[in-house]
Length: 246
Ligand code: GTP
Ligand code: MG
Image (cartoon, rainbow, N blue to C red; front, side, top):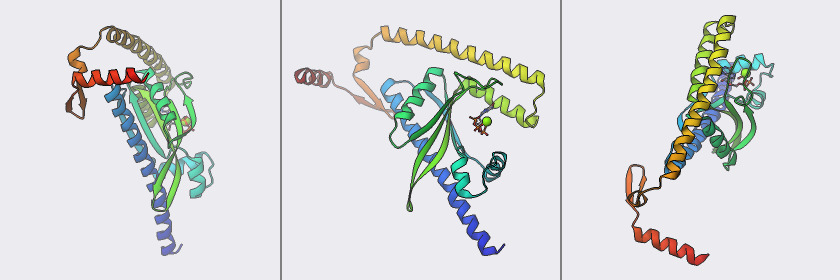
């Protein structure tokens, strides 16, 4: 092949990969805003941490061959939907569904498919919620909708999945049966732990709901480590104005 042609092809691949990097950036920003929204409004952080990656060209090629996808960039673009991947790790199962709902409602994000491996775990015990989404990416050449995969799971599910992943890597996807069985048992323990933690958390929420804020707490407001005072007069005047409108 001509050197110039190879150069051109490389440029095309750079452009291709770049779109996925931008899709990941867009998603990460959206998720960061959800996280801060929660933090400011509910004084609570449902997101433990967020990681992301763009699939390497090598893994893209492997997956394309495995799935018998035609080896052209447009076909790969349409058929391999997890080149851009974001993983959201939460503390509690209910947070997973809350975040998933918030993402589904977000303007500028199309959720094509939701795979609930929490309600229906995989036979090996894998649990997580996957959203297959389309993210609009804006560049100087126009808007392009890029496929991406968002995985949402608890810390415990993540712990299990990363161990299982390591074992698959080590045993080249042929984990010995005794270990498969142990992983399965561990997955059940993870599910039990998650529901126990959920119950305890609900207790804490109920306790908080029954113990009202002090006036002192009502009169301050924090944004980004910056403290604002909320004068009592201000609250009362707003309250009155609201009452008059009704
Ligand atoms: P691939 O598994 O990526 O080929 O695609 P798929 O179309 O089968 O989608 P699926 O929903 O099964 O999995 C998508 C992604 O979820 C994977 O790439 C993994 O990151 C994760 N995943 C799915 N199943 C497992 C599992 O059994 N163990 C672990 N550790 N991760 C899994
Ligand atoms: Mg799979």
